[in-house]
Length: 169
Image 1 (cartoon, rainbow, N blue to C red):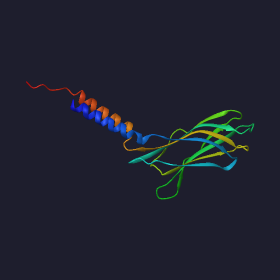
Image 2: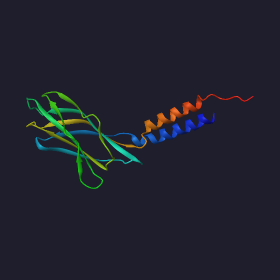
Image 3: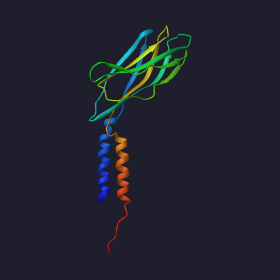
Image 4: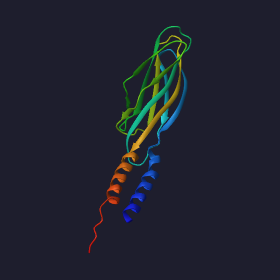
């Protein structure tokens, strides 16, 4: 019984701390002008206690601004380095067909620490520019990750609960 109480207490603690890893989700609705400069959107991060790494992801749609041919959009992340300077992800390029919303999803890009600021860059080769809409997720993940801690506590608790009891006569 005492082991079950400890397990429940540990699970409540992990659930209370799990809000520290919730995604910061920024709505994105922006025109992307033609040319090599494109558009850059800057975001500041909430830094949890004991941050370990950062997950970055953009998903949404690219729409041609009336240009009748096939074009493309490149998406790139950047972040400030602790000692100064800026780091960049590799550009991720997606085709953009005219007259429809074209789905884009960068997947999750991992930064090996939790920077204070991150940016999202869009560049298009369309002579008419384009419009981007979607969501930018940037999440600092603390150590241990809440989901991992929950699994460890649950496994340990199940071992305590299922432990055979010895009867002494």
